[in-house]
Image 1 (cartoon, helix red, strand yellow):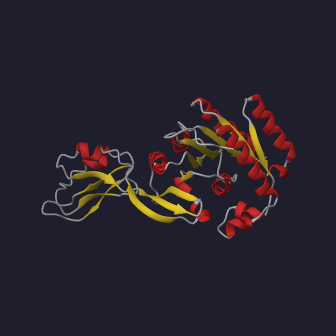
Image 2 (tube, one colour; image 1 turned 60 degrees about the horizontal axis):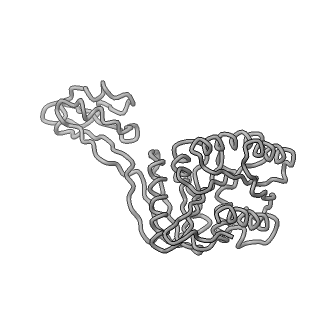
Image 3 (cartoon, helix red, strand yellow; image 1 turned 180 degrees about the vertical axis):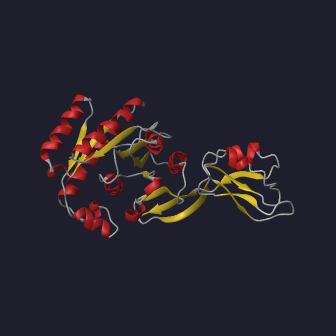
Length: 305
């Protein structure tokens, strides 16, 4: 069983997957119901859904700014078109309102703008305002299973890696303030920037995969990523009994890479029924999946001890 490693020490467990839909969040929700003295962090900010199971009550919220965006002050625009010439994202159009100098001015599409700032640098009339943009919100909430830090990224917004870093920092800070020794992180799927931000510096990574050929392939990719950052990675095979042959192949691949398979979770329709009711399967049922997830948590807790 996991025991806090001393006053001021915060251990971070990050649960990730090679792709979406493997059951990563269901595993985290189960851990939330089983673990004691922890803070939960939903770092899958591009498609956050841990809140659907944990029903958080928001106590604090803050805007998130992950970059800057440009806007043209129509009154200052001379209509020279320099901004449109230097923009490489086709974000500038010649359909802005008239002013005292020209009949039409230039306008920047805030969705197409990448926030590079080139237009502001080259504008001879100093008509481009380059200011911080609001890309989403992050929250500190209370759930039936303890405190949770999570976020919502705006539509078509980017810099999710920076938002993940913010969530992890605030979760660790909250754990320190409340004297809680563990942060359980629902990380992003894949191998991109949000995943890197989810796992760097983590005490342990648990990779959730499924017994399919694509599951095996994606497991290898995310394991390579964890290895690149020299982070201890372990594996859980979800729905392991739907393809025992592929589950054996995954175990063999993990053995070749010196990665421990900490558990297998059998397919169980109770998981879906629990989600419909807004619960983890641990709270809903004591069947196959719940039993396997309890055993998985014990194995993970032993590794964190």
